[in-house]
Length: 99
Ligand SMILES: [Zn+2]
Image (tube, rainbow, N blue to C red):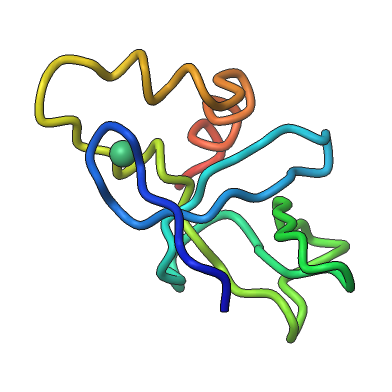
């Protein structure tokens, strides 16, 4: 296991992944069965993330995680610094899909 990264804002353990759109997305380091992002590791050790779909549900080699932006709790009003690291439109899209 590689050393975890830590959120610069709230200090939580996070994992940087690359989405299918080649964007960086930080997810909570611990898997979350209720998360909406499927995370896997490719043959070169890169963490990849994607949205599970009806056609491509979560595979046995993938674990569900929650995007960190959904759980980040900055100790001070410095949220923009954390949010600036990720693709906001993508996160909003994901949140819109939630039940
Ligand atoms: Zn955070």
